[in-house]
Length: 187
Image 1 (cartoon, rainbow, N blue to C red):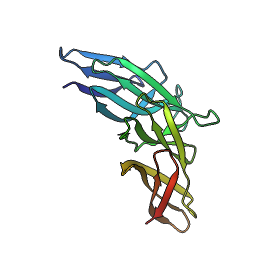
Image 2 (tube, rainbow, N blue to C red):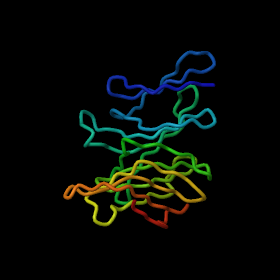
Image 3 (cartoon, rainbow, N blue to C red):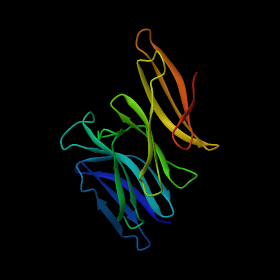
């Protein structure tokens, strides 16, 4: 069973995979400094999502969300970056996780400014849809933390609130397989 290790090296991310010969192979992204927020392993392929940063900038100047597929020897299979309909860079939530969907694709959460996004891809990482999870009515902020696929629907769970008065509530959106919003509830 291959073992994978993600680590930072001089501001860039290396992905090291120990194969049968136990000699680590390392792939260094040819992008500016990169942060990987979530990973999963499927059929000896590591699938990771993260954000590429502009050289020398802080977390507030993120350059784009990506998904990368890397084999058990550490070789890059494919790599995709995500943009909204206007070509603006999407970035990922720090608390992100990636799920493998029933149709063989992937689903994870992103952001565009203060907009929370649900990103669904096919098995190659090409986007199927990118949908906004709007702020709940009356909220000044919202942060969505996880996505789950249950009974052919995607559930996006998070919290939102107001600063004056200080209120925090849990909230959840439900989307169908095509990305249409079906339901919303606030707890």
